[in-house]
Length: 146
Picture (cartoon, one colour):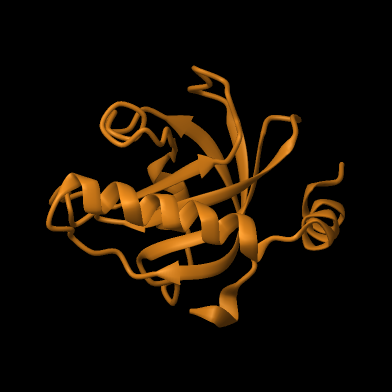
């Protein structure tokens, strides 16, 4: 798993299940299935941290999940990216570039929605902590400069 990171992926933002913003207070950008199909087989399902940019906009820290979201019993694998401090309501159809930098945890089902929300809050905190400004600047130059 670690040997493929950092990993840059890109694709279109598509509609997901609609739970991120509504149920969890954590809106996500779902990437199209083609991106999932092209991920390295050694990349395990789980929660990761990284950076992302929608179109040619700013680069944001992210927490992202790759997998079946076992808490909800999904049967379809998704790649969902939460852009930290990003406040655009609708950007479906936009191109997004995501740099997956590090692994946080495996995906799991939780005993309650509140426990899931607490885990997501922790994932976001880890994402912020693991990407200090100097590392963000390095990755911006290496992966996001035009």
